[in-house]
Image (cartoon, rainbow, N blue to C red; front, side, top):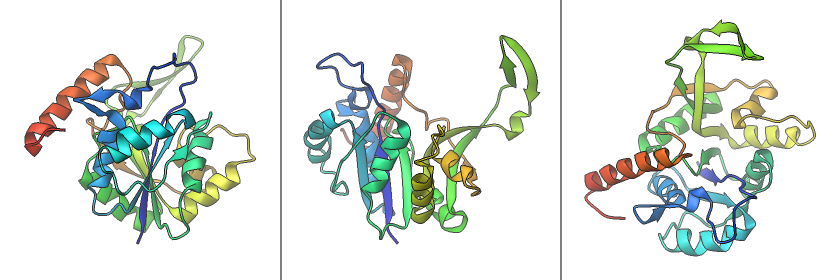
Amino acid sequence: MKCSAIIYTGHYPDLDPGVLPPHFKPIEGMPVIAHTIRVFQESEQVDEIIPVVAPEFMLYMSDNVVDRYKFDKVQKIRESKETRYSTIMSGLEGLTKDTDIVLLHDSLRPFVDADTISKLITECLEHDAVVLGIQAQQPVKRAEGGYILASLDRRRIYLMQSPQVFKYSLIMDAYRSAATTGHVFADDAAVVEYYGSKVRVLEGSGENFRIESDADFEIARYLIQKNMKSRGSDV
């Protein structure tokens, strides 16, 4: 069985010259995306890793991340595009047909762990499509025009995380079919849902958050320092 992880990055067209996008920002001397890839590099169940980055940063990715940290599961780097759909499609098109399981993961979520990856792969073998989600803990409302329209049952509301994991044939067929719809999909699960497939949800972890703000970077720095101490090694 071959499991491939696609580590995708966002599109940042308005960056000033010389400014690196957030996934290349260092935490304890190591780029965020390198922290993320390392989890998949160390997973015994992941055979291949395909980062998807903007074309102008592909050489930087190769020299300063893949080669520097000896990520030998990365055999190719794919170009990100202007839309999320096109970026994921670029990554999927880099897979070989002998791929069985695809893990789609946000580069700005470096705190997914090996046990979670293993559980997702195991569940995917049975259910074809599996995602992580955090069940809503606070009251959830639906509003429009500044007024609340309805109170929603938070027990049925999940905040999505990644990786989102799929059988190769399922996610490829769904993405290829979706190319001509013009529909904007919130995430990868939404693409397979659109074509009638059921998606299993597993409870995620609060530590598997997406790094977005300066405060997030400070939390990430603390967690990485803690992890480094527990590993007994430096980056």
